[in-house]
Amino acid sequence: MKSINNYDFSGKRALVRVDFNVPLNEKNEITDDNRIRAAIPTIKKIVDTGGSAVIMSHLGRPKEYKEKYSLKHIVPHLSKLTGKNVKFAPECIGEETFNMAKELKPGEIMLLENLRFFKEETQGNREFAKKLAGLGDIFVNDAFGTAHRAHASTACVAECFEEEKMFGYLMEKELKSMDKVLNRAEKPFSAIIGGAKVSEKILVIEKLLNQVDNLLIGGGMAYTFVKAKGGETGSSATEDERLEIAENLVSFAEKKGVNLVLPVDNVIADKFDNDANTKETPIDKIPVGWMGLDIGTESVELFTSVIKNSKTILWNGPLGVFEMPKFEKGTVSIAKAIAEATTNGAFSLVGGGDVVGAIKKYNLQDQVSFISTGGGAMLEYMEGKELPGIEAIRGNKINH
Ligand code: AMP
Image (tube, rainbow, N blue to C red; front, side, top):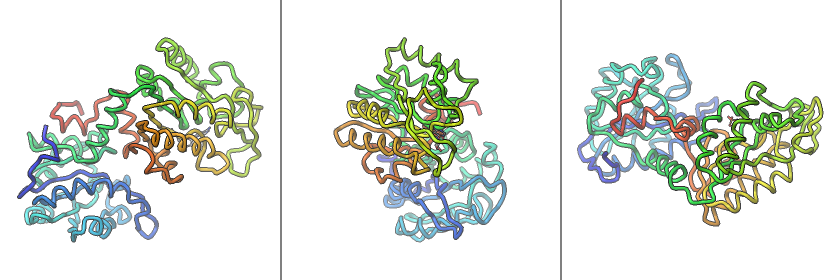
């Protein structure tokens, strides 16, 4: 496989799939440019070493052209970050775009209009992918966030390039971090899994139970485990049809010798609101009409002590409803404990949309080892699934 670091881009036109799916405000200003910044090393490598770059991305989930989702809003900022006058192709395919790409000179950058203005993108249409492929001599995939989708611009386009394809720097870093955690984790290895529902994380929990020493479970999903053990969970967010699965996961953890840690106490509220009345109770003694919305003081101490003794840490999913200040203490404390363990030499991988938001909210983004840019893609990779966008670069045939 080709590597971006060794590749000679001089005189080459690189077609680069990035993830510029960034949040914009009502004035179409970018409110968080991390995803754009994350792709800059790849773009700079190409244009600083004599190549030109045709950049493509999606933005939002439009079904047809909508000005709000136009990638033209990104052009000024991309120009600023690259120090180049970025050209804009008003469509991602078509004659005009093809000619603009052909005329690109070494060092120049062109951004294509939103791929999802064509339904063929998400359909994984091969004809559409071929048209995209015609815009470059070489394909670089740097969009980890969409790697689990068999879309035209991720998997299908890569299949149009026999040899001339590679991962970008960001994608390489994502894969390296996950490989470090999944295959070369220094022990003790602890995973902290939170979030709303256990149903979305069953597969990843099952997979992780083969690897971790400690599995800490928090957030809404903890209540399904508590209820399965016969605890009183009030109106907490349990998934009653998953009680048996939760029990099975607990037995599997025992069989594997994994220390599965559930919260022992929690902050409960009489309504799902920051103005609710709150109090702390044992996790399995929640009165009727009350719901658990954050882990409690003792649980924070328990989780923190495990995290402090870990050499590898994986975090996915918040420990409580951290969007409301009254229920953020668990998530803040765990984020801080992970940052501290990282300072003391642990490797920490943080991923999943909500925890990325939390880490940034508490300004700890520079104190963890790696923040994944792909929530869904990261989970699927960790479940052991083959991601179409990755396999297509590796040259493996996939069914899609
Ligand atoms: P996920 O996308 O599965 O990682 O879930 C993230 C969401 O879970 C966040 O929006 C949190 O507010 C929510 N969450 C965390 N803890 C709880 C809880 N105890 N009850 C209800 N929702 C929760």
